[in-house]
Image (cartoon, rainbow, N blue to C red):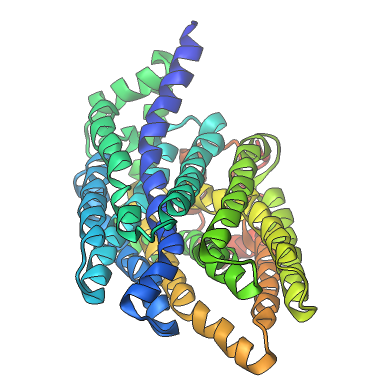
Length: 470
């Protein structure tokens, strides 16, 4: 095995450990979909109660990035992941043994804090440790881990649905949490965080392990040069240039939550039962196939991010998502077979996983300068989870309103289709191409923008960040 292969293998191993945070993110937020029908019966929940059972973890996830603002910069990326793992573990135990619905909601919120921390730190850590030519694929490892977490959560839900063992659904999360806790002892700290903390020798050692000594010295020099351009304060986030990067991150992440596909995943069994698919166990069984589509799509995404630019994949993907939502609406309007609902869900969810799901995290993890990346990503993720909370809380009530007004929930999916088209337009007009550029090149681009003229140029539809796409 030559040195380059050894370095690449090491990078992937480190990324897989960090991505366990993404796995837990997917598992924790998805296990509720299989447990919800049993929770509804056990605690006698109405539509608002169902929304609260689902969205409480997301509300907790809003608190995670708020804590991450300080933790990511104060104690480092690796230690923050360890704190996230602790939140996951206490939540797994607490949600398995609640005596009241209030207790269940409290422990779901604790797990949500872990979700919020992991969502901020896992892709950020991977982006900061990865070379430019591998960054897109390695950050997509985090999305793959999220999808695997979703798939295993659905399978666990299905197996435990016979007999209604919803408590074991939540307890089953403990094993991967232990894996993350052990794995964190063997991964290095982010070299960019070390450099920002004036620990250049340690940063160089990590970069040498990743890139070899010659490239490591060059990259450390670029990191230190960029750090001279930054103050690292919240105030810097609102300077010309940086504020546009912040706007892009916020809007892309809001679109990643309000596009409707996440609601299909969170409420998949409930949607299929309403469509007439059969029993709750039947509905959970069919969502296994939905999540297998998502898994295959994520694997294809590894190839896509290597061949195509970020913008091309995003625009194409969200337009196909819009078609999926339109198909979903048609099945309800025509009172078609419930299996056609499932096909429409396959189309929308597959396109989401090929495009917006991985690339929203790739873009947000790479678009900000080093010194303020932790603060910027934390703010973006707070707004992300606020949007996700609102969707999860009000989705049952939204579909219920359409059900009462139209006799079916098809109108909701017309609304989601319009949102997807808006995302495509925003990406075309505003989002720049970042493929193939180092984090320092991207950071310096924003730091050197001093007026509105360049911001307007970035939003001209060309999508160019530099002379070439890379």
